[in-house]
Image (cartoon, rainbow, N blue to C red; front, top):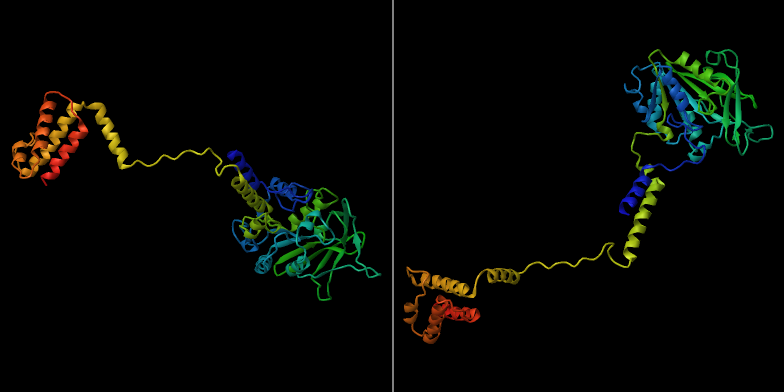
Length: 408
């Protein structure tokens, strides 16, 4: 039972909880409809260097991410699942300015199912800070937001290119997808935004849907559809052609295609907030507390059978053990003679006699006040033992002790 319980706990901590149907986040490891696994594997098959970035943007300059400083393509998807830090925006803009290209797949004209599981409160703010372009919803003549899509099922979001441009060469239509009702957004461009190119429009509203701008030596391309290169949409319309054009015109010969997986939750960084907010941690703690409570309320205060504790040995036990051993090995006669010998050695050492094994009868008889009758009985007992006659050992011990005390 203990092994099975341990197995359940380990499985609960290591196996991630199941996501709602279709709500996989747009990462290179996600093989569901919203992932980039198909595009990622296709790039590898085409011998194109591709990297899953699982750290923040300050690592873009790392040689392990991109060996060369320019000619690389970074694909990011908004809204972010893990919010971007303020310092990262400066690192990202500096990386773009070094001659790299940023492709922003923004769910502006879409409401993908995974976006319902993220905090979108800073979505437009982050998009503005990264791209330098402000966005606002399109308002119709009646003052309502222009919308498309339905409450259930997928709705195609179609786009058409505007004029001739290297990125839209060979493209007739592009097709995104929304899983719910979504607003239509437009770039809030001013007359000074002459460096922002409009590359495609959304078909139902006629509003711009793809933009391109420059940042120092680099390029920023923004798509109002986040689903163009996902597993479920990359094969639709001419989406693959758009990806091929991006690689042909914005990726150097030894450049790297980088997918931002970190801000969609696929991170190599330790996130204590995510750990403590994980519902599996709370379930594990509750399980342990419930098991502890069941242990306390059980019929016994132990889960195993109570074993009687053996007391520690005492000095009396040692004496009994030694006495029992001697009683089994020595006869009463031999024991009595051994007692006389030990008693004699003690007294002879005290009197300074040379013969230690023989009782000092003469010396004892000359001691004033000595109990001569007791001494005579001891002599008779010693003579009997030498003749092989048994005696009472307890009486002998007491008599020997009396004489020993009288000679101190």
